Length: 313
Image (cartoon, rainbow, N blue to C red; front, side):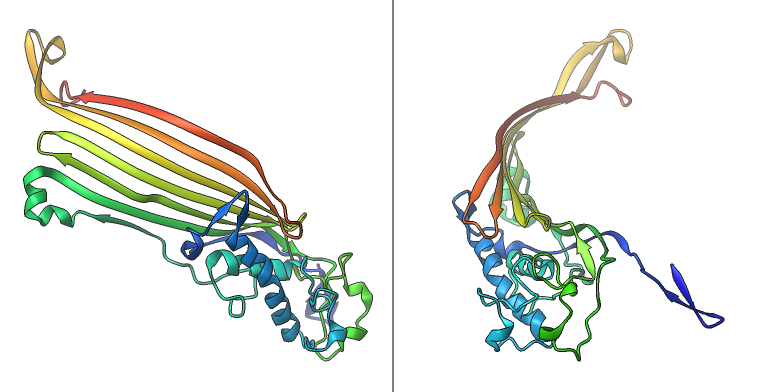
């Protein structure tokens, strides 16, 4: 809404902005850190980063973080406690993207997308031994990571701070029920997703028409909820082994090609066996408790065979 200010001027009244946001990022620095139901090194970094982020936010707001009167019992600046979403979000991003908590951007929105990639290398076929034994030989690696704000909206109960005002004498109404300063924008949850698709893939065909494929995929998804300060981590690992064979110029008598005709074409056969392990872990920020809430092992078998009867079939 708008309030009139004079004849032609209008000032915005209770502006409300909402939406979602996602951008490519990189978590590769922490991709192979130890992380299971017994604990997570990166999650411990997340916990520890909160204090550094809180001190940076307080200093930016003009609070003397070296004055014990401005700190709570755990050493956090008053109003910027360990449950403040303005503290949690940068601490979460800095830990899982492997950035220094003293330098990471404090805001929720990023404006520079980080390139992801897919790489395929076939240069080994230039070597004499590979030329002699293989028809083709390739190595593939791919990486994709995304940072997502599921939903953001304006805090209609937000009170802007006057930087010239002593925070110790601020009206207590600017604090929420947790004793934290209210934030201009509210978030329900943020997520980081990472996929090695594939982590490594070897695909080759030998001179005798035998085909072999070996592939490893790895992924993880991290959801941080600001409603209950829980981190949900979903881990996935998949292994695929494929075998194939091509029977060249297989002759089949069929009427599909006309009366009494003999069809000659290649028969391509391929069988893939895969196994995928999924595991969901919930981590509590301020309680030393990690729980597996879901897990499964999925086996898969796929067989295909194709043969060209005619140009159209």
